[in-house]
Image (tube, rainbow, N blue to C red; front, top):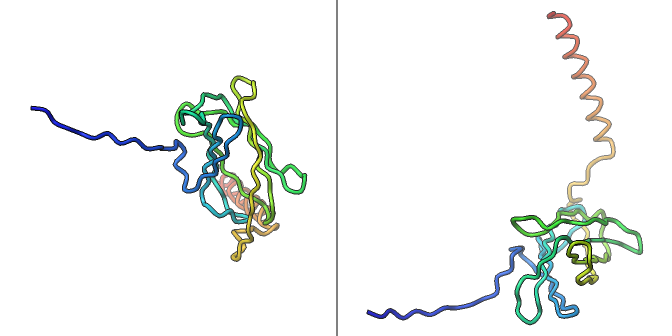
Length: 160
C-alpha cells in the first residue's frame, strides 16, 4: 500500500527572538533577533546573532561576533561574543538612556572577518522609570552588611 504525503519547507531562524532585524550585506544575511521589539531605556533587551548565506539561506559557520554599541560617537559597549556549541550567539544589554544608538556587528571565523554592518537603534524613554536604582543603594547595602557582620561576629565571639 502506498501512502502519499506532502513535505513543506519553511525558514526557521535559530535565535527564536520575537523581532528580527535582517540586513543583506556582501552575499550574506545578517539576522539580529531582538526581544522585546521596542527597546526601552533601563530595561534589558536580548540580542541574538545569526549569519546566513543569501543564496541558500543556510547558516554560515563563524566562531565569534564582535559587537559595538555607541551613542553620539561614544562607545557604550564593545566586546567579542564567542559562538556557543548549543543555542544562539547572543547577549543581554540594558541601554542607560533613551536616544539614537548604533549597533555594529562583525562576524568572524578564527579571527578573520567574514562580514560586518551597522544598524541604527532607537531607545525610548521608560515612563515608569524602568527600575532605576537610587545611587544610595550600594552604600545602604554596604552599611547593612557591616552591621550584620559585626553583630554575627559579636554573637559568635560570645558563644566560644
